[in-house]
Amino acid sequence: MTNDAAPIRRHRWLSHGSEGLLVRLAVASRALAAIGGGYAVAALSAAVLALWLPLERVEATLAATLASFVIHVCAVMWVFAARSAWRAWLGLAVPAALLGVLLLARQAGSQA
Image 1 (cartoon, one colour):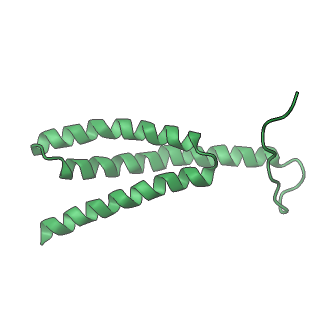
Image 2 (tube, rainbow, N blue to C red):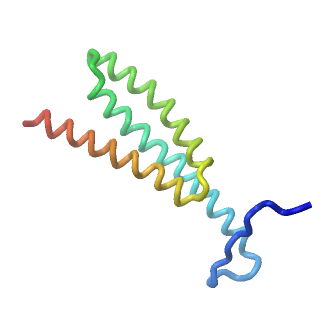
Image 3 (tube, rainbow, N blue to C red):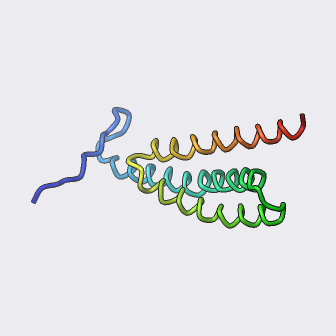
């Protein structure tokens, strides 16, 4: 029987046998990314969709809010499907930044 799992890299500042700590920290980081980052992406997408959907204001807000639940679930799935915690955070930071730019662009356009 072979061990197909990749070995966990041990940093020089960690003592021998600390691999379990690294795994726990990686899972904790992913959980924080799923909860906080997923919420941020979902909230930003709801705001952007509510402003950009070509519907009445109430209908656009309702549709954007309902879509944000799906987006949050997809973000959580992405976080735990990513190869590393760094990729999970990056996979949330890029869409959040793009949605933030869209939100700022719409607000700047409405003030002009």
